[in-house]
Length: 56
Length: 454
Image (cartoon, rainbow over all chains, first blue to last red; front, side, top):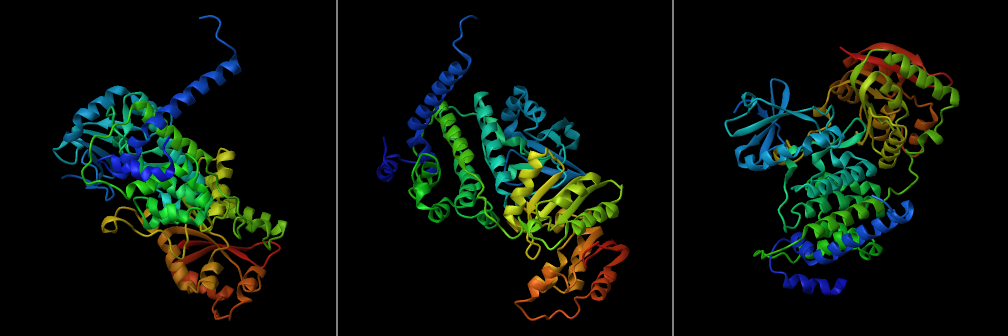
């Protein structure tokens, strides 16, 4: 987990790209994890609303 | 070169928009041939056009090309009135932002993406936002970060955050910053509370900070498709979390505190409808439209009414009410008539002034002239010179000094307006117009005129 104050240092390790590119690269893991979690939650909520799929 | 390039369309080497024999075309250049071929065969453009998310176009023969570099020529449906992000209400900018992100997600899932995210690529047509830049779409580059991320944050996220969390009027920063509000500026202006959290904290404050440490030697930067979709999804959540502040403003609540009696207000509405008659018009401009009550009357006889007002809260209310009522032919926009949208951008030609986007068929100027003449010291002859430059027909209201609204304006200042009388008004109007009709508004001291240019 990268804290706000650490981030400047992290950016320093990323050699290259504009600030926008570097930010995306630095946070790619967090973005991907958040997206994966969102997908799982969406499926769970969908299942709770509709009930589990019992047949094809 | 045959045809005239549209002045704002010169940055993209992939193609440009031009006019020829009165019609609008978009040329796709040879350097974009491979990409265009992939886009065309994906069917995405027609799907978006059918869903009302993108402007529809038909591909026409290369005979229509502007030059020999063309590999395709498109004829897009024409948008009846071009508006700009600095003229939009908060909710209009928010809807345009969400459209951009929605299309980006759809595109990435199909192996494409939006290679830019300019707010100027969106226009409002038939009551909804529409992507107009067909060539924004390009094949997705696996592993690459989104090149338009910074642009999206400058053009959409920063102004939306400032309007929502500081003041609606900060949307006008887009007029000075055509490529969007600089992130460091937005970061300085936003309250401390916005620094925390994964929305504005990351996409705006941290982003602003990261742009300060840019490197001239970019190394390998990798962003997976899942990370890209996660980032876009996070941006969409952040945009959705922003709301227009519900401030009370003079103009938004004007009709609640007006000096009109109910009878006078109904009389004015009936007179406006009567003066407009049954004649169908393509375009009506309602100047000083407030929340759009009279624009709705005009919309009965117009393909499009552009409802212009200087109060961002009134424009916001007009847009939200139109949305709620499913009205598709009233476009509320922000406009200060003492300082209307000028020609802007490269060589003063990228973004057109308000006047250059006219003329309208008819202009409504209801309860406006006293604000220009007394509130802003614009001499009456100049007011009518300006109105004559906007339309051949003007429906205008005269509010005399005896009216309580004008009394209120004069109570704190010296009356230096000896010519502001009904006779002076008619004399000034007559220099440029014929007075076709005039009728007093019942239960008031005001008069409504219908003028036609000489």
